[in-house]
Image 1 (cartoon, rainbow, N blue to C red):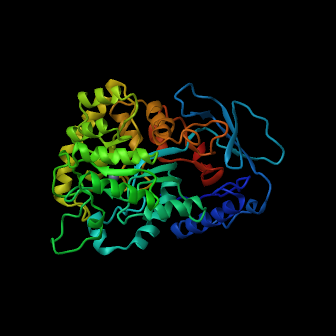
Image 2: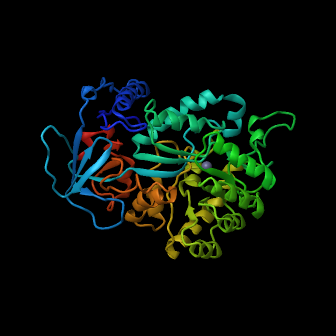
Image 3: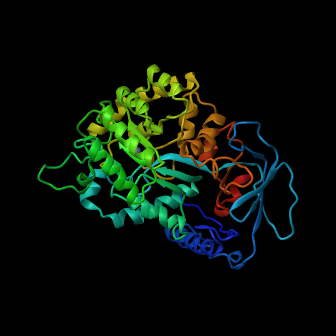
Length: 467
Ligand SMILES: [Zn+2]
C-alpha cells in the first residue's frame, strides 16, 4: 500500500493552514513519514528542491481524460492548471506558462480527490475497539491515526468525514495536526466522540460490570444528557455529531437492527446540533431506527442496512435534508477476514446475516434513484483500501460514473463543503486523483491511483503505472 512518491510544491498565498511556510513543513513531513513507513521499499527521495522557492508554483496536469465530478461528459484530453493550493484553469488545451511544472499523466484519467463519509482514521484494524479501551492509550491512536491518514490520502481520499475515535477527541487532535501541516492526511471533518446510550452500540459490553471502562463516561441517556453531550463535543472541537441510533454489528448486546435511542432522544441531538449550525450523522441498521433518524432530521443515515420503501419515501419527502450513506464493503471485508482473532465469531455471524439485507437496501435505493453517499467504515475495510467500495457498488448495479459522483460532488454537498472540494472547478482546492486508463470501463483502476494531489501538493506520483 505504501508506494514511492515524489513531493511537493509549496502552495502560494499564505492562508490559514495552507501557507507556503506550512507547505514546506508538510513537504518535509511527507518525505519523512513516507520514508519511515516504507522502510525497505527503496524510496526515500530526500526533500524537495522546489520547497525553497518563495514564488507561486504553477503546475500543469495533463491527462488523457478528466471526469470533473459533475457527472457530465468526459473531457478528453484534459489539462488542469494549479496555482498554489487552488485550481486556476481547466480545459482541453491550456497555455503552459514559462517556469510551470508540467506533469504528463499519459493515458490516465483525472478526477476530483475522493471523499469518504465514514472513516475511523485513529482506529486500528488489528485491535477490536473494546479491547483497545483496555490495552491502548490516546497517544497510541494518535500515532496510528497519523499513519492511517497518510495511507488514506495516498489511496486518493483527500477528504474524510471521520465518524468517531475510540478515545474521545483524538480525531480533533489529528485534524488540527493535518490542518497545521504537521502531519500529511486528508481534510477531516470529525465527530469528536460517539453519542451512545447506556448499553448501546458505543458502550463497551464485553467486560465485568466491576471494570471501569473509560468510554462509559461518554454515554448519554434522555434528551437532557444528550443535549449536554452534544454541547460537550462541540466545545471540545467536534465538527458534527455522531449518534448511534441502533445496535451495531461490532458490538454485543442489542441486535444491530433494534432502535436504541428513542425518537425523542434522536430529536434532541438534532435540535441542539442545529442550534450550533451543524448536523448529526446517525449510525442506523434497522428500519425503525433509520426512519426515526430521518424523521428527526439527521444529515446522514450511515450503513442504512434495512432501508425499506417507507424510508425511501421519507428521504424523498425530506428533499435532501437527509442522505442515505451505505457502507457496502463492511460485510464483505469483515467476512474476508474470516476467523481472525480480532472479530469474534458472534460478530462475524451478524455480518453474514446483515450483508444480504444491506445489499437489498442498496439496490432498492438505486432503483428509486435517490442520491447515495459514498462511505467505507474504514478500518472495517482496511485503511487505504477505501476505493474497493467503488467496485462493490458497481457489482450491485451502480454505474461507474454514479459512484464517482457520489464520492466527489455529492459527498461534498452532504458535508456542506461544496464551495471548496468535490469537483474540478476554478477556485476550488487543487485536490485531484489520477487513475490509470479509464475508470468508466474498469472501475477497479481506482484502487491503483498514479497521482494524488491535495491543496496543490503532490502526495503520490507513480509515472510508471500511467502507460
Ligand atoms: Zn463506523
